[in-house]
Image (cartoon, rainbow, N blue to C red; front, side, top):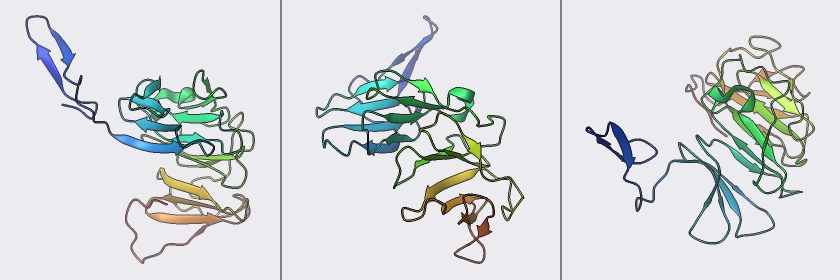
Length: 212
């Protein structure tokens, strides 16, 4: 058994076969809703890819392998983002402009030699849908739907006091220059789009993972 279901090994045939024909389970890592339709949603699923709901019990798989974060552009809902695990290198973030039918990789400017979690943190600006942030052990910002990225933090520099991977990040809805990120048990905030960072930890001895 794995997080992708149950499988049986046939010794004489030297092969595995799936036992999941009527086993309707999966490990869901994220859910993204189409803001214009209650009958459209996307999920990222461990070992079961990125899948789309269109109003019936039968979901369609849009991408295979591991599915991490999914995002839907709230201004243009036909624009969808999905994430593979970080081992996919320059293809780990992809964008679709046709509701998940076709995809293109969108990681230009992100150094995939950075340390990172299995699924790097990925989020959309809640006020400007074309603006994205992603996190390896550095925060990256894209102003153009992922077409290009630039790092706005550096490990152990300008108030960022760790080299650990980023667990979560978000942009303040009322201030585009205010960004929060958690890494190494700390919460960091910038109010100037990454020129400086300040640790604002809620407790004296934070845990090793903090999520927003």
